[in-house]
Figure: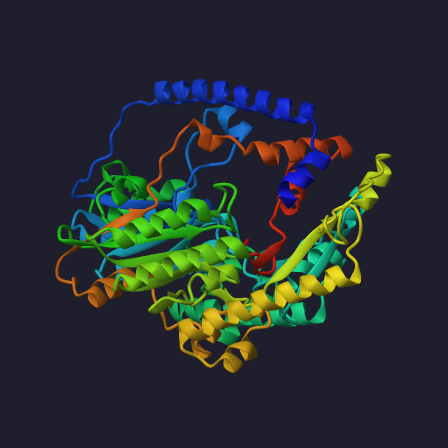
Length: 594
């Protein structure tokens, strides 16, 4: 109801028609782009030979798993239909390379990877396992980002361009605050929350970070850096203090010769020389004799590491923000039926829920939790594998699992909820609109988006939030077999790094998705023979590339108020205004791994 009310208030038929026209144009462009893409294909097929080397391009965004893409006009106009790299595909390729005798080693080309610490750690762990097969890993980069270097530090040798740079600066993170932006729009946010550390609402009502929010992030970043620094130090033969000392010397701006002398890198060479170096390593005379294979190709030779045949362990991905309206994140209306179908499938003997979510809609979260409880009622093991984030609503849906695996750099917890209701009185005054309401009872129009809440309405809302928080606490207490008072002591909306989360009982152990699959198979008693099914099955189509009509209409309406605003800013504003009022969502921040 709230969403429709907002849309009716802010949208126009002109915006809707423009959205439709844009969709038609995008469709046509997409079709022609696909035709061009296929026409340009040279038909060269990759193959495995005895002189093969897996080449991993550490560049751009690494997603958790393939999913329907949003609309990108520039991508379509270029005819570039390649999707971002995915963690599961890269790790599958590394694991296949480790087992395949034809793959002699790995060549890491480092060029500005963009991923959260836990994703980078998962890649690094897979590479560490690869090295155990007595195969080499060489890394090369012109300009290493910190994320690049963290992964590359596991390599046998790190090569660098003689004119290159290496960014090493520790951990920092940024949180955008939108209050000033919405003040200009004339939109105020009415907030009701539970939890001292539940700071997800701060960007909408404050200009800067509160002290509790700053304190929890300071602890979080310190703990994450402690893990990363320790692993880099161990791989490169440093003491932890030496890494910090190099950072204090502004190593990012030091010449490559200093990096070589400091043993951060092993050799300074130009990229053209790497072909001969790798050829020599595998016993070939010429660079042209090396057969490089891609992660996309090699991953198709691998099936999540599971044995084929027999009963199935299902791996169900739950990635993104939880909602009940679109496919941009975890749509509960689509995920719940998937869970119920897996529960009723006699061939599925266990479920591994792969969670990479900051949370979202409380309603959607509870629907998913209940469906997972139904799955457990079928006497099948439910195991959770946490990715970059499994916080707030993401932790809610994880808490009932029989066993929880997390990456050491996973961010989790954030047990708390909040209510966020926009109030548009300032906007209507700006555009010369006066809203008059007639109702049979006081509060019949609640929430009234055009007037502030009354004290009685705010009190009622607070009771609603408190009840939701108590429910969250109860879910965690039962799922984790902890007293409620202990859960409340570690809740309050606080985010935790996985090392701390394991210590306080929020997770059971550290491990990868593959560890979780093996554990699930063992719990189900099928470890000797089983297959793995990955869900939901991606069904790409033209409509995956089109934005939702509701969001496009909202963006169009906002663009009329802010004709000079860029589309990214308008999309952020539309997303915030389109959220459900009751949220279990972690604070918004971005960790800088550049």
